Image: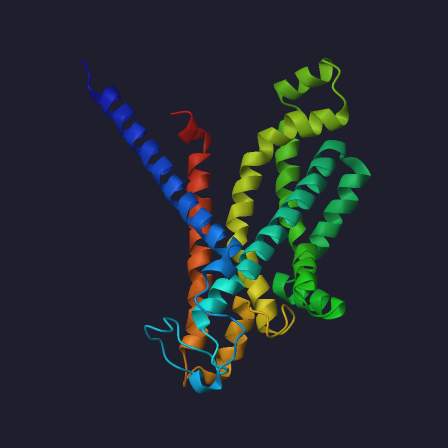
Length: 286
């Protein structure tokens, strides 16, 4: 009797459990990050906006683990406080673009014809420009501020989700379960949102999670260029901008928010990669 089949099944189970463990680990890290951002004002060791020029540009120490900035403000407190804006503004941005783009893609894939042609040509127009350059133009027209920065990035980010949802909708449109739902008398909205949307939600969700890191860096880029939050509000991109002129004298002013962006982007990218592996049909069928 061959032992190859039991060995293969055992390896598949080990691999599946490994993916589940990684997914749980990165999900816990993301949850801790979100909790820290939500309760930032309660866990900051100092007032992030209190100035003390006698403590200006102090290097990292036990009293100030991340050092202080040019105004003597504690950088650890400002990094923690800045996470509220940086993280939750990014999540709001991704949620809006994913929901809006998916809805447009579903409509295009379902209706086809002129509706599909017009909306897809509009998406092609947005995709023809470099995303950050287009966002700079939109944010410049709208003016500064975190709300306008989110709107600017949302305007240029929806086409990727629309394209993805459209392709998935076209693939599911003529499937057996959709034909059965039509024969049962389901209305078009019910067909789209009760039957089709749950079957395409997996790839859209994975794309949204993987897009969090990109959106966070672009939002920080707008703040770095002065089109995001306004000083003295703490936000990672604006904090890097504040410390760039003192990079050689006080590099911790740039490294502290830069490392915060790096760690956060890494957590969400690894979470997205692991979620994609977990939701792979081949993986789920084993």
